[in-house]
Length: 243
Ligand code: COA
Image 1 (cartoon, rainbow, N blue to C red):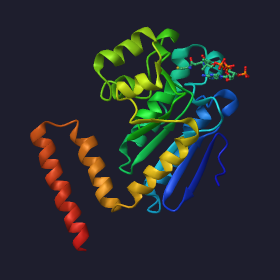
Image 2: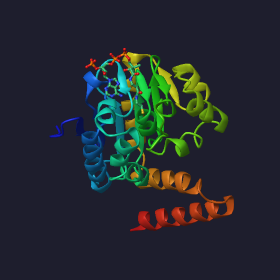
Image 3: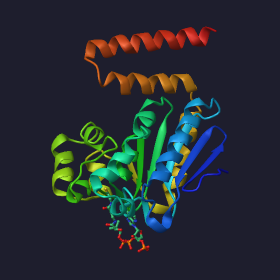
Image 4: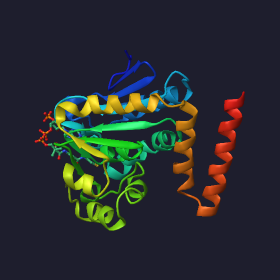
């Protein structure tokens, strides 16, 4: 069990579970959550005992309802409130970890909630999940990479519609747009995430990590460079296996 205040960190048989744990505030992302996530992500990166990570939200109603609006309201302006979030690069750290992350999404998945989900590799949603980016309506833009990760995941025009009109997606719409990989009934969400994590864990951990790197790093390269990266990673994997 973890000693954190607003997240729960657990580890079982090589699977790490991060639970956003402010259910009364719909798991809104606050400064404390930023700090605790930063700490736990660093530990996950460095812990050879963690092979797969599941990210989920506590409570019935939400995975995460976005940035904590009470912190916004106590700051002189949303822009200044937002500055606080740039002090620790949680998102850069998230995206730099080559271990597989599965997001288990239910209820409200808004703002930073979508952005956290987009830092994960595979997204499972329950049928009650709803997705939205309220930032533009608050006079700000996403600050956790969402303006970059969303259009790399769903079509550019669909991402722009969500950003510019605040349109929310139902779970079936999110599936159709490929924002999520699968929809399952609510009671099946965590079992489905667990089953997938166990499947991934049954494979060679380095093969999984190199495959993730090949895809995520390769997407920023030309095809030729990406193929060279794949070759290099493949050779490194073989060299590791021969040790
Ligand atoms: N920050 C801080 N507290 C939040 C929150 C947020 N982003 N979202 C919800 N909460 C709190 C509510 O203030 C409420 O607290 P209370 O019980 O002390 O009054 C509690 O969570 C439950 O929310 P409530 O609004 O009563 O639930 P609902 O089902 O009627 O509505 C939402 C759910 C998500 C539609 C609504 O809470 C909402 O619009 N939240 C803000 C979303 C947002 O703009 N996020 C910022 C993105 S940048």
